[in-house]
Image (cartoon, rainbow, N blue to C red; front, side):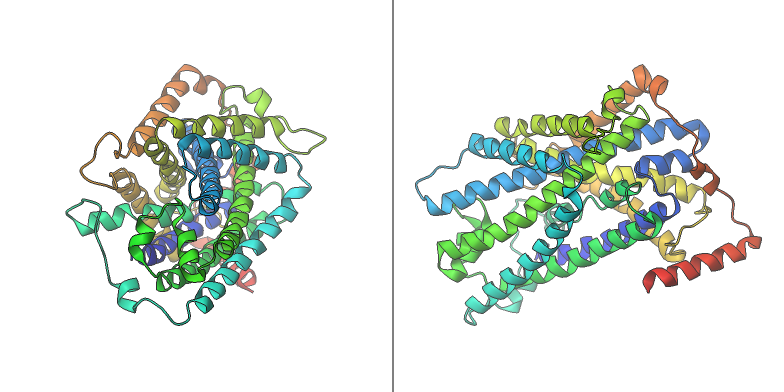
Length: 462
């Protein structure tokens, strides 16, 4: 129930996030994304500091996101091995080793720019094909033995220890929220595509649309096909969805094949995450936002990529993965922080956009009052997530079950503030660009500009 309704809730909020990001990227296309928007929208007195904080949140969020995707891949691979080897005991260091192998294998794919467009296309079609094949296969093999609609849409079994079912439901929203995170990834390709003010909004909005349709229908199909819920909750593989496949197909080979389709989709996702991460690091380093920026801002002429930025970011991901060896609970909290870090990086430029009463020269994608509503939703959701996603998912909270997401958020914030006053404010560059000319107070006489904006939106929709 949390997943079914959670997907609807999070997809609705993600639509508002997508509209907000699309408006800003359409008006101010730049590989720096949100930290560049902050630099332009914030009052000059505070622009440098908040731009630096925004860029820091975005980059750290991308590092944690890459780590979370890679650890998911490692968990799937070890679970597939467990299904065919019942005597195998899955240990944390096994997952860690697979995590490092998968992570550095993915690193290689991002060292050649010519591969990336093809990989991106293949990842999209693999994801859609996997959704279609798995859904049809599982439904057809169920032989009409489906769970009731009440089981899927109504039954709520609160086994979290929280006395409030509402809090239990809210903490469960972390899962669908993670699935719809990183919506800004396309904005950091703004300097590598033609007409980014039009193309990138299409990419962002279609991401949410495709994500909602596939995840919502897939979740419902899988939940209707569950045979034994207790067996799923107490599964021995560590990968519950594969246990659903096995219950329905009653064949380990078939279950592993369907799981492999999910694995292929997630591997493509991991490659795209690293692409997004390296572009963020490179663009932020161009403005001396990171220690050692003179190295990370370089673009390798042979690969036509910021290889050093990619290498440094990947090393950090590998280090973050080491936390998994000490405590899986602490690690899960850290990667959950990727949601809050990314939301903070969105909220900062949105705050200054609203302070300007949205009076900027719009790009082809501009939603007027709908955009204003979306901006407000983004800010409200950020505050909501910062509070409730820091709650423990299980009560009573103990050292092993505590949610350390708040510690990660506060720790990174303190580090960035200290770095800013010690070194950052002396090094961080607020270079003047042509984008500064995009900021102006729209008066009544700007009716012509508004009409052009409406025309552009119509063309974009067509």
